[in-house]
Image (cartoon, rainbow, N blue to C red; front, side, top):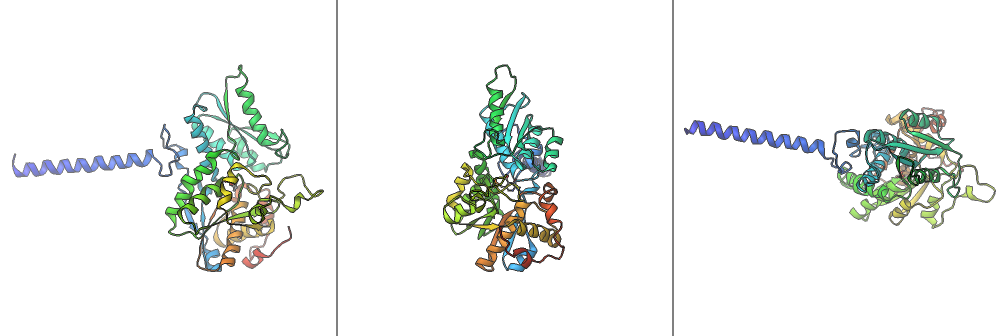
Amino acid sequence: MSWKTALQTSATIVSIAIIINELQKAYRQVTTSESGLTSLPPRSRGIESRIGNTALIEIKTLSAKTGCKIYAKLELNNPAGSSKDRVALAIIRAAESQNQLVPHEQNVIFEGTSGSTGISFAVLANALGYTAHICLPDDTSPEKLQLLEALGAEVEKVKPASIVDPNQYVNAAKRGADAINNDPTNDRKAIFANQFENDFNWRIHYTTTGPELIKQLDHIDVFINGSGTGGTIAGVGRCLKEHNIETKVILADPQGSGLANRINFGVLYDTVEKEGTRRRHQVDTLVEGIGLNRLTWNFKQGEPYIDEAVRVTDEQASKMAKYLCINDGLFWGSSAAINCVAAVKTALKYGPGQNIVVVACDSGDRHLSKFWKHAVQIPNDITLEDVLLEERN
Ligand SMILES: Cc1ncc(COP(=O)(O)O)c(C=O)c1O
């Protein structure tokens, strides 16, 4: 072989090797997700492969006004619109790995939820070959009900009740799943997702949301979030603390919730629980998704890592939502607004120069008929000073 042919042959071999390498890289990119959220087979490019790895943005006006850097993790950009996509997928994958769920075999996922988790289950059930059966209070906001119905979920409305009542929506979901599984004549099989008590909830935030934040920001001084099930604050809080013990983990808590007192004073109590003042709803707030008057498994997993709690009124949250919408173009839901009020209070308490991270769990369009019905009336020229004015709660 002449030197020219040898050169041409080796150039061809090198080119083929490069092409194969690039093809392999591309294949790896589409079949595995960095977050590990789609790690079980069958791997796919389906909607579930887009869960996680959400962006982190800076909330510029809050940074400028406080001298800190205030960032938000855009969990609302998950495919079904909230951080609950991670939890729903983790619970489904765990059930599949234990053979409790088999796609396209008439399997049903029961969950008791008044909000985002039901929507995540409804979307993922459709994508992965299941039926979602969602039990919720009959006064859940109309847009969420309509959304669940549009998604084709089985929707079961129950009267609002306390968790000790067997007809409370979480208990109704468990009962529904048990009824199917205990009926030998029923062809269907069911799981009860049980997000409040399910260990996979906090763990998915520990293994995905937390590590994503560590990659996204060199240094995190403070992480702030509300607690619904407690899964996010438990998983992210523990992950960040293990990475850097100096990172403060702060609970943002709405009016009517007993969790702030639990963190600050060791007692789960809110003034609305005084005898004779207890109202129809356990947590009396316009805010949806966070605040509770009972201790859940997931919250308990986070409790040792939470340094302090900041209480935020509905009034402050509504004003913050309007402020962020007008000044930063951020149209967010109520729990994100609560987190941002707590972030500003924390920035003012500990002084400038800190990196503060909050979670933007969902968008304002899920809250138009309740929280935003109030927030929309707040004037466009609301200032941050006005936002922070203390209201009695
Ligand atoms: C809108 C919204 N924000 C925040 C949360 C709180 O998340 P976690 O349940 O992880 O505490 C929830 C929970 O359902 C929610 O729906």
